[in-house]
Each structure stands twice: as structure tokens, then as C-alpha cells.
Image 1 (spheres, rainbow, N blue to C red):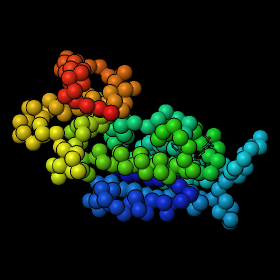
Image 2 (cartoon, rainbow, N blue to C red):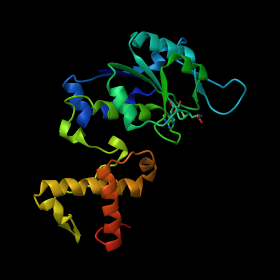
Image 3 (cartoon, helix red, strand yellow):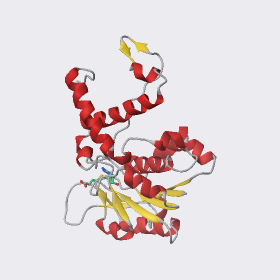
Image 4 (cartoon, rainbow, N blue to C red):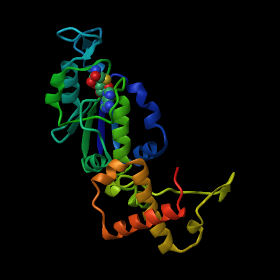
Length: 247
Ligand code: SAH
């Protein structure tokens, strides 16, 4: 897979490319990431790529021409082109899975007040990483690249991907490691029981409970299996009897 990122601030990517899982994926050539400086495609000797908005208003907008030129020079006919923007449907794990199937992705980062609206005609899709406004698309492109790359074969242990938050609209169950008792906060005993069936049952239950507690909006679109309906009833009983306590 190849990911090409068009940006005005290539330096922002240094730490991202040189650390942890992404560094490893690059070293193993499981993914190739090209960072392209949009200024290299400016048409004036001052390397200006932005201008004031037509109709007035604050700030500077990125112009379409250098972006188009950067795109033409760095895309192939098979590239899937994304534009980072706060004005789009929010990104989610389902979209990450969809993008992970593509071989060639190009991501355009806006900056300053934004980008000439006509750039929309040059892209396949606009993506927002959430309902807030960033100073630029660089962080958004790193979020997209990171979440997609970790889904690629061999980048991380496939067992870690077997069940994760947002799969099936549920959050992952809570996990614990040593020590068993930290200042009175203890690991649930069932996880030390060695009884794998019970542990699996407990984890499914906690996954449902945490989704209800922290992301009830996900539950609304979830279709419950018979097993999950039974687990929900158990959760209610546990809450009533004090077997499970939540804040
Ligand atoms: N004035 C614009 C915001 C521009 S922010 C508005 O009010 O809609 C500048 C750039 O940051 C955008 O062009 C985009 O590339 C990026 N950006 C800002 N917020 C983002 C978000 N939530 N998701 C993805 N990209 C974002």
C-alpha cells in the first residue's frame, strides 16, 4: 500500500514516520509513505500557495492550482484521493477498514482558513476526523494513515485485531496487567481463574456494559444477538445485586 500526503508542513510528519508501529511497517516495506510539499508546486518564485477569500473575510485560503499540480504529479489513475475537512462525515473504524483495502491513497491537508472549495472536484471523498476544527489537515492525515496502516496484514499481531473497539459497534472489554493489586484497585478475580469460557463470557458482558456506559449512541444502531440479550439481562441483575458497580 502507498499513502501520499500533500501538505504545507512536511516537518510535522517526522516523529510519526520515525516511531513505533509506523516505523516498523515502513522498514518492512508493508507500506510506503510519501510526504509531498505543496509549495514545490507553487507557480511563483515566492512559493506562495495561498490567497485571500473572494467576497472578503478573515484568513488565507489554499489555492486550487498548486494542489492540482501536486496531485497530478503524485497520483496514479488508481489513486483514491481524500481531502481532510471539518465539513464532512466523521471518520470511523468502518471507513478505516474500507480504506485499508485500497492500494494507493492520497490525502490532501488544508491549512489556515481552509482551502478553495473547488478542490472538492479533484477528490473522491472528504473526511473529517471529528466535530472540531484543527489548524491543518496534517494531524487528520496522520490519524487516517495510522488507523489504516495498523489494519494491514503483518503490521501488528493479527490476534490484537481479532476483537477491538468499534468492531460490531461495541467497545473493547477492559484489560489488566500486573500487578494484581495496585493501591487497593484489584484485577477482577475471574481473569485469574484460568476458566476460558467464563473469561470469555465476562469479557463479552463487560464489552456491552462499557458500550452502554460510554457510547450509548453505538448501542442504538446495534442489532443484538440472542446471547447479547441474555448478557444484557445479566448486567441488569448484576447492577441490582451490586455484583457490578459503576460510577
Ligand atoms: N474555516 C474552516 C476550517 C479550516 S481548518 C471551517 O470553518 O470549516 C484548516 C484545515 O484543517 C482544513 O482545510 C482541513 O484540512 C483541516 N481540518 C480542520 N479540522 C478538521 C477535521 N475535523 N477533520 C479533518 N481535517 C480538518
